[in-house]
Length: 403
Image: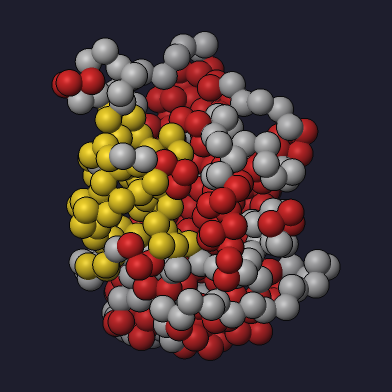
């Protein structure tokens, strides 16, 4: 990858990300089938999201970013997903990683941003790899799974388990979860992404072989979660005061809602022209069809209001600089999956009422249905787990260890 990333002019603050990307939606939608066939978002789409300002959107102004509102960011991702869910997904997940930078040592912040505020960062946050201790750091070997959009990234945030030398049971290898920064030259990409949903997301594996990670590029996951990392306090921004694990998940409802928006649009167009194959009856006159449509629009409107409320509460919390308790953290974290789950019900309602051709490869409805439900399957959208956490929290009970 070229060592020098392109630097694009900052977008006007008064213009939303949705407005900036909207003129390109038709072209992005036209490439959606090819994106799925290639199993990765095309370079043309990546350049468009850079130019629109998505990459620097959640980078604090103190680090050269635009520090946009969460609602602006998520609405932009939703708008993209309504045209091409895979492009919306990659945009949402890649560019939320800029918000992780303030939690790292200043030297790491400078290292990553040496090529400018439009530097793309991918991730594989699940700490599946077990590292070995080395002088001044750790040695990492293994695969980091499902790194969406990694083909286009210059850096990666990677989860890893590190031996805890402070534990009395260290010989039995007690581990702590960490997140480390890796440059594109530190790993290879294994093309393992073959999926029914989000086919174009390029969520491939990052492969490490005896890679040395210095301690300065590492942060404990709980330190990042509760803001006592090495970078804590080095960047004055509301973004740096919100735990990164909370910010990471904000884009997931936007994907499901964007897929539902696309489904509404396709369903409306289809009903206007649809005729029953046996009777010739017009679809536009079918009460069941327009009742499904009306209920879906009502539900999306209400979900949008609730989504915006949750995003604004989270941002205000960062702006106020309040320290999060575990209970407050769980309260915020468990509400987003509700929106993603309900958006999935909208997808089901319209898909089931669209007729048999909705499943055909040429029909975008099947893509919105597949990809919207894929967003629900992400661990950050696990509504069963969220209900358990939130229910226990409401009763004043601590979360169970198995969750």
